[in-house]
Image (tube, rainbow, N blue to C red):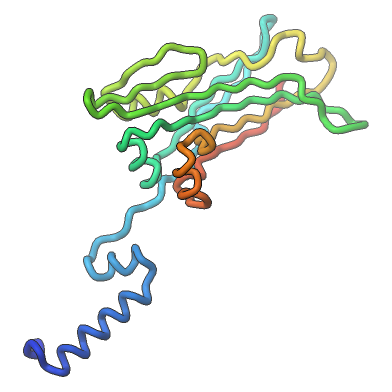
Length: 203
């Protein structure tokens, strides 16, 4: 077994200097991981639509959806520091036109606000035009902001009989509603680019 060079020796100083230079050449997270043996934090998984259904009857057009996602490290850290986060669901309905650009005939938007309350260890969720509700379980709070059943996105008269229509949907984390200093600091960071889209015809 090779014994390490004694403290203060030229060989030991050279070895430590070489290790320091090697760590500096690595990216910040990778450098720490290389020296500590612990992998850096993973980014949140890309969001996916686990459910997406459009239904129509004599009272209008309805959308049901469920978005599955994990919060990235930066977003999760902000939530646990009681920074309010805003998630926006947007549904647009277009009528196809062969002679011009497709015409938008309906627009529906819902915003969900979620904030962590450390005094009660609960998550408070407030939907657009709805009542706030508190959840003690994190998974339940996230489900409340990412799943909607029979959301009315158009009135009957907005859909023209005999014409072709389609719906464009987007669900995203709205960083424009964050405190201004945070908006500057998170520009371009992947953690905060949480968004999923879907386009589907209306039967």
